[in-house]
Image (cartoon, rainbow, N blue to C red; front, top):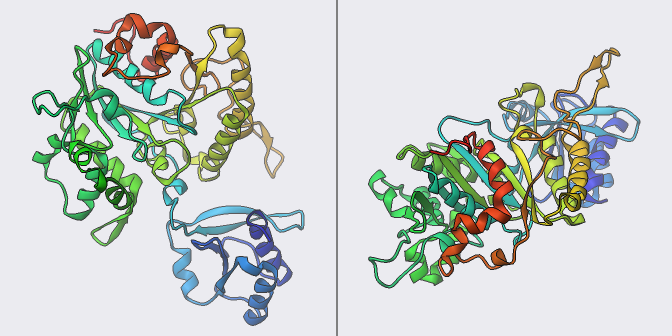
Length: 444
């Protein structure tokens, strides 16, 4: 028995023991991955539990079967989803499903719809080293140089970057642009005793490179830099659920509340968020919990498309597209960025083709016949030729340029000079302005 075999196996045992697989049946997967079957009334529960243990082996929960009134309480749990399972009979069954995770609960949430206020733009990637943070810094500089007020937030808490790129430190407090604290401090302190409004200024540094304004909330601030031994201890406690008024507050909700709080105190035009690379729990918070436009960076390599297939197929599995509109459908807020791209468009074509195949298999819908034989049209199915925002396979690109292999605008301020960055980043910036709904032709 292996993980991918366990759900069909528990369904098969239920069918063999005349247990209906319908919406009155719940399958629970606990934090270790073990399974429990729950239904209020079953014939011969002792025999059923023995059959579950015999079939599931290590995947049987310590209590493999739940019956009675406790199942009614379980059925009322708002976190339940529905899952389709093939028990090996050729018929697909739909049951209720509870996925009890020790970590990764934020990944079970459907992406949040956009809210009010400035647009949020999240920079994500599967791996580091693809220029994600560099692109954020360049876009922030370009926006600021043309009068836009920008807030940059470093959510790459385990590999901080934006703060170090944009906020020079100094032993001379008059020259030190780092704030006292960062995102890690906020999540930690807010969960313990709270942070009063007048102390929020201790979390924002202002970048000195640009004529405009870039406010930066780094992952860590000056206090952690000066006491590096506290970093790991803080981090381990910042990324946990809080308790508020008797309810659990997820990491994603904490991050959302944090950003809303800072945004409400200033008239920002855009909020740029650097997400942690990979599929860790903290990655889910900015990708799913902010109602943001999302840029996913990657190079033209098989592992890029395979990795994004894992994420996209999961997001589709937790999404109820019947409840979404064009304004709330997260697929239309998703864009991909080819990093370190060749200058010739013909050499970028394979990336776009591979990306279309990925989107067609994971995101885009196809026409189908319903149970009555009626045609159901596809609501979201961009053609290969479609371009522009809202078309995920129409990738942005950033050209490879040796001057940006080692990005350090503190040591080399020319890296944020428009005459320098327009070459490799020009096409990227053009589309990013469109995604943010800004007019690049009139940038006053």
